[in-house]
Image (cartoon, rainbow, N blue to C red; front, side):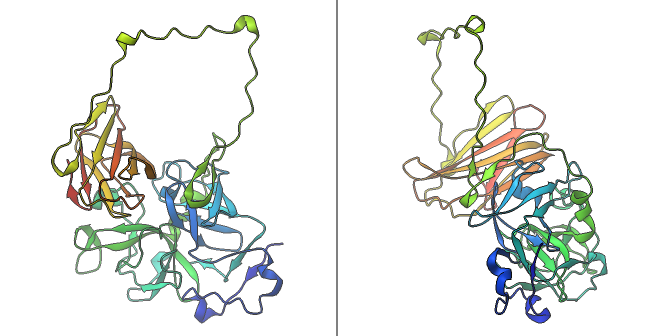
Length: 381
């Protein structure tokens, strides 16, 4: 039998966890609203809507999740599995079925975002804001952020201020009665008109954006069939290789002789990268892939935004790998896209002076990628 650890209505609205007197309910794994997750994309948070169901942002899966993929808390403990994906809807949300031994802290439900009145306080809660942060919604009308700000997701609603940070993606937006009105998708440089409607982009202004509760059905109603074994994710978002059964050995008579090695004279050495201005290497393209090396003299701060845009197509894949001054890999994040002309990833580690990142981009149409890459808003190529 599932159990729910309740909190008082007033304290719960600010995300406070009351454990006194909870008794045996805490014998299993307690799960609080906005708790941090260990996911393929690095760090994200969770939105609880009942004692059996939760949601998080689809981009947290970095294109690796299938139905049945395990979902883990930040400490590596399994808390559930992916039960539905958004498919081709473009909505940034996945549904999670919580495990039987998880105790949900608080009594949570949902409420349509369209019913939130302008000026009414709602709370954003993720791993960086464990007590919740007040915000409001002037316009609950959804929009396609690909048209507004060049991102890849549909069904977005903008809050009036930026009250979340990297790692809060997938966290909750809820009202004073603990009714979830949306799932945090991230931050966007959204500009508003006089009536509070999202009308365009303004690089000087950031707002928290969310998937409204009405759009959660995009994942809840149309699960995608699993096509591959679910990856096992351990602590710090490291994907562990799943064991596979050994392949049956072919009869001796059917074994193929190994292919002859090419003569040494035919091997071509890879050209050394040519470093240009700002410590950026020249682009190297192999059919549909472009790789860029970025090495500022002072290093790169953790979570600095690395963004790529193109005017000749769109991206199917982006990866950012961080290296220290000795060339040792210290972080990696990747993201699969659906052919949109803009994609971005936060720098996955603190890159010291002398270190660098490698940015890999793959074009969706199989053509050389003509991309412009910016680091923290500054063009690097």
